[in-house]
Amino acid sequence: MNESGSAPDWADAPAGWNWLAQDADGRWFWYRTEPQLNWSGGVWRSNSRNQQPAGEGVANPDWDTTMQRRPGTEE
Image 1: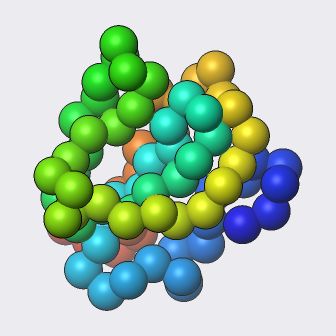
Image 2: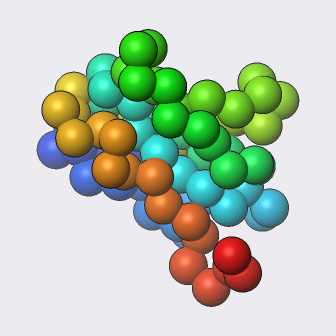
């Protein structure tokens, strides 16, 4: 992860962790289950066992648009 705020590389994602999203403060997380938007907290939510840090970034006012599904996975 670089400091420019660009998303972590999917090559670094753990197997089976098929979602990635950035919180308002710039932190990125991998998710094992699809996260839910939590507007009031400025975060994406999932059970803590289904969330793991993916990298640091810069605060992002458009954080709510960052959720991605692993390329090539079924919807």
